[in-house]
Amino acid sequence: MDIGKILFMILQNIKKLVMRNLSGELTFLEFKCLKIIYQNPITQKEIIEETGMTKGTVSKALRSLEERGFVTRRRVGREYRVEITEEGKAVMRKFEKIASEINEILLKNFTEDEKQTLQTLLKKMLRNLDQVEDET
Image 1 (tube, rainbow, N blue to C red):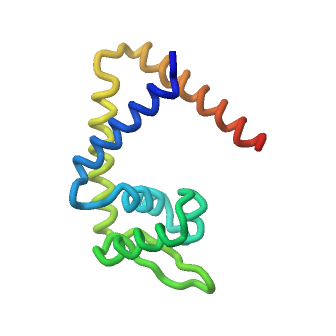
Image 2: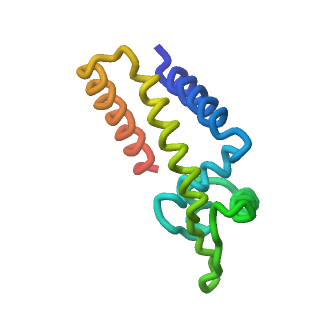
């Protein structure tokens, strides 16, 4: 059984559902940046580090988000500090609703025990990946 392939297919399908529901509002890269900013104000450099995207890609996504009023950027010393606006928060609340619906779809017909077991196993897989990351 190729668990990696199954997880990749699940992720791709989730991405399709999210983008279908946010269609016209955000590109996937813009969404990825907005999701990071939604958690806490952050510097543009930190977004680059967290996403692994290039400086140019992040800058383009943030410029687009700023033009549409979803984020604000202000210069603090040598860096740009990025914060989410109320309009951006509204988009993220819409995403949270979509995420909840996707979660319901994914776990439909699972018993509570199966849900708990799945969560435990997925966390274990994540810890395994974290250990590999720590070793490199």
